[in-house]
Length: 219
Image (spheres, one colour):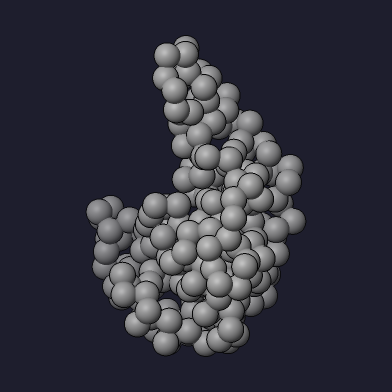
C-alpha cells in the first residue's frame, strides 16, 4: 500500500536526521538558548511553507519563538547581534530567503538555516555573491529531503510523490526546542511554556503568567 510506503519513508527520513544532524541540532539549541538567556529574540520566517506555525504561540510550546511580519524588510531593521533568525530554503537558492540571510548575517545576527544539502549542491546560486544559503548561514541543518523534495515514485505518475521537507523540519524544530528547554533549565532559567488556550484555564494562565513573565524577562 502507498500509505505503508510513505510511513516507511518517513521512518527512514527521521532516522537519517537523527544519524546525521544530531550534532547540528544540539549546536542550534546552544545558539538559541544562549540568545534567549542573554536578552536576544528568536525569529522564524517561512520554514518550509509555514511549518513554524506549529511552534508559534502554541499549547505545549515556548513563548520565546516569534514570527516576522509579512513585511520582512521592515522587520530586518529590528534585528540585532543578540538575535537569532531561523529561515528555510529546501533548494538553498530561494532568492528572497538568501537575500535576507545575507543582510541578517551582515548585521551580526546569527542565522540558522534549514536546507536539503542533496538538493542545494545540484542547483546554481542566484545571489550576486555567488553563494547559496548554506554558504551564508551561521549554522545549516540538513533536513535530509531528497533533491526535488519528494520521497516516492508511484507507477502511473510522472512526478515524484510525498514532500519531505515540511515534516522533517517540524521534527527538527521540536528536537531543537527540547534541547533548548533542557539547556535553559540546567542554567536555572525556566522558559515560559504555553498552555492550550482552549483547555479550561489555559488562556488565563497564558495571559496572566506566561506573557507577563516573557515581557519582563524575555523567556
